[in-house]
Length: 122
Length: 107
Figure 1 (spheres, one colour):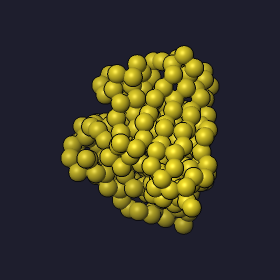
Figure 2: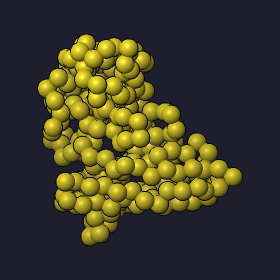
Figure 3: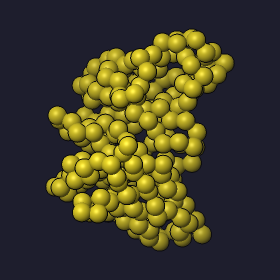
């Protein structure tokens, strides 16, 4: 069974930094586009960033562009999200999600981790 | 950015009833629309992809339809475990966007 396990969340001061990790298993990680999606408390889903299988293409939401950096280590089956200059409105559960392989574009998100909570507060 | 608008915000129905949820896109997304179900404290689960294809393991009571800008998720006969929040998502163009969600609650 495909598994995605996020870690690295916690409480951080405004302006601070945090790095999230996502450990993947039971599938060929290097074949898939991977994604981060967040959900503020009591709110809907917000796509954050995507990275293609060989890191050729990387995309960011405008709300995090210039502050967050997505990366992956295919040898370690791991996805990362480096978050800098954190703000209160970055407070959310951050999910790692796999995009299904699609004929065109990025596929739907077929597997999700359980998420890790990031709280930005002084 | 493609904006997805879901309606209604909340739908109150009883088990056994039929549920119809709507998702409207601000511009055409072709058939690149997915539906997700989310229960409290859980991650979203993919239900429908490319407008009308059920994901692996999803019961046949869930069906999706539509193309272009108007999409529908139908649950033919509600089971107790179907009461949850449902989100639509488009992958036609960047940025990927989600609708704001429809909460399906027990009447």
